[in-house]
Image 1 (tube, rainbow, N blue to C red):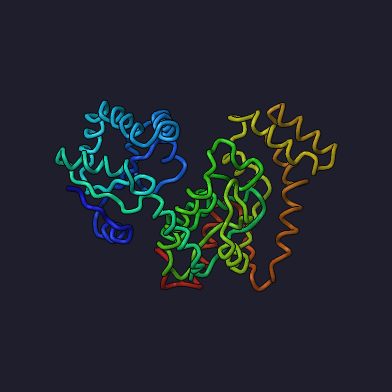
Image 2: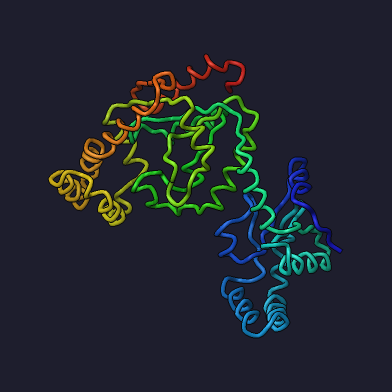
Length: 350
């Protein structure tokens, strides 16, 4: 007979050894939000889950169980085969530790595949995430990468992370670049998915002396930063990066690659078009339509993004600002590492 496992006991196991988490909910539920690192081996497809749910509401629970069993029985060989491919210890979960995970764990046990079931399912995990955020407890000092649009802040964060520094990549978690064009080519995260990733990273870095993150607004795409983290970010040390405008245009084009989604860029521009002086807005519109993206980006920086940045930069006190003048992203990265080496010589990765 399979065994249930509590969430905290599961965390303890994961700290000791490799452990596979299997979400047996439908692909749609899994895509919406899951426990980070889990894989999806669903009992029902999206359509099958909808069908069983309709029967449950219109006919009753017994009829729904019978139809569910009929559907699942036909796919049992493939279901078991997928689990046999996983060599690590396994734990299955559904939404609330109910019928789907119980059925999966029972069948696996009968076929000699050992697996535990997460008590309370994903709902318990979600409650844990909310409780962790409610603690409003994140100790490290925050160093915030700020600067004009296109100064390569995201690229610098990525390289800092690769070099061993603690980094909260908020845009990566949100799957959004933080601008009006930020969702193009990406699939933005919802709040549940974002918070799950955020809590995990915060726990990873809870004992760090400092953490890097980018100077984001409170809202990034579809998600919102927790109040306590946003306020701590605003009080952190602001590293203002300054690059030549030509470098900034190059960085933006390399990151966004507007030629791959020309219609999406035109559509997004319409949202901010009315905030730009009409003749300039018309020129930007024409540049986007003609594929002259360098000129469009240059005008957007000069007449939209840079004035907004200059206003925001004035809101921070001088004792919370460090200005970093660099030739390019690589130069800015080197200067940031030099600063951190002076401030935290015993903590900086070599």
